[in-house]
Image (tube, rainbow, N blue to C red; front, side):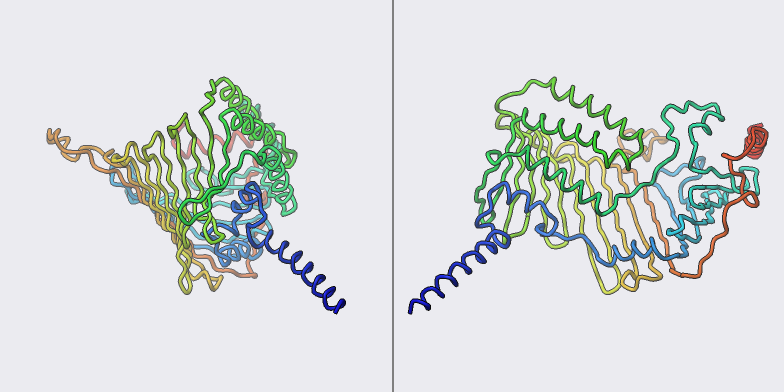
Length: 446
């Protein structure tokens, strides 16, 4: 009997321990508001998932497998002007790319609406980039090696103060990304204390709120910007000029923010709306007393994200992003609207981005349509007929991009050397002068 009781007590303890661990990680029973806040900001807890595994595989395959591409970019606008030659213009292109060797060749033709064609050839070989076109007066590529750029600028009489020695294309390793994530999680975990968080029920949803006074928000923001500008990983990856610009901007912003006069009633509020253990909405408010100075919301449902931004109670921006998947294709639909007042729509952007045949990961066609409309901003249609009562028309711009990519391990690209290129870095002053003269002469400037 004692053994049975002992066994049951041990079993109960085990169940309590296991249940407690489950309750902490698989439920919200023992989590503080602060822990729940950070937990429900993660991707796995947000209701909407706009990631396509096949799309990630597709981009990874481009990094590791050579491919041929063929496509075009076309432009059209309602503001047609025969003199500019841009309406109904298009660029056709085809070429080969080997990303693992940092190499590509592209033949492109700019086809203007006045039947004027400009053929251009582009080439990359490692850190050397070249362009060849008849209008430049050279049969060879005119190329620049991505090194000693300050010296090269000075040879052309340019101010080299803000020109880097080399334009860096550093990418972040997985370890570096994890370090950055850990560092800035620790930053927020330290700066945002438990008393800044609260929990409440709104209908069927649990709302976790972060509340900061204007002074708290300003102090945390300026310290964050300073931390970013001094970050060793970011400084090693991003261009020196970019980081210097960020530091200067941070100092200016810090001075501007600290010069503001705080009211004890002004505050920043961020709420996460949770239902059935999924994040349904994130809302950010900037309050001046009891009035909302700015309100931004992101709502998540199925494969859709809806974003809205209000200023002083009136909507200024609205955006919807959704993903559609069928048997072979993945399509992203993005609609953005800008407002000035509730009934005054200023502009609208519609994007339809389709990856055809994506599931096969070969012969994938990227088919993108972008329509930009500026409301009531066009010329008066009857202006030259003295009809001043007509309303200005909407101005529309359409951009269509298509690119079919076929993968092949057999692709080979020729190197760029003195046989097919004039590499500016290695050219003598006389050779540079000849190149510049030929370009000016070909363009009719001399």
